[in-house]
Every structure is written in structure tokens, then in C-alpha cells.
Image (cartoon, rainbow, N blue to C red; front, side, top):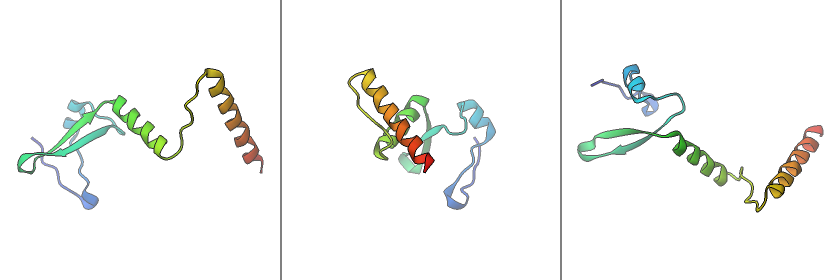
Amino acid sequence: MSLVRVKEKYQVTLPSALRVKAGLAVGDYLQASIGRAGVITLTPKPAADRDIAEGLADLRAGRAHGPYRTADEAIAALEKKAGSSKRAAKK
């Protein structure tokens, strides 16, 4: 068992041995929960969960396009977007 300290802004650093054993990398997501007697649990979430979370964030921020019924419809939308980006860059 390792002892960690809560720092300013309520940050903690996970000891190297824990990170390696859990297979964590920079950018990985951990689900935080609190159980009985105030026990805090951090559970690694798979990359698929991270991709879904990023996709949902993109949707909420308006950075997603579609849905498209056909591939041609999607390609046309991308070409239109690329054309408007080129015009904006020239200004």
C-alpha cells in the first residue's frame, strides 16, 4: 500500500509501481467513486470509453457533422468544409 498526499488544487500523484501495475499511461481516464467509510476508488477506463467520451464532447461542442445517408453525401460535406476553410485562410 502506498501513501499519497493531496496537493494544491486537490491533485495526487500515483506512485510509479501502481501506474505500471495498472497499465496506465498519460491521458488515460480513471473513474472516481466513493464507497463506504469514505473509501475512494479509481478504476481505469478502457480506451473505447475515452473515445466515446471525446466523441460526445465533440457533439456537445458542435464539432461533429452528419449524419449522412451515403458516403457520397459525407464526401460532399467534407469537400464543402475544406473549400470554406481555404477561403477563410486566404482572407
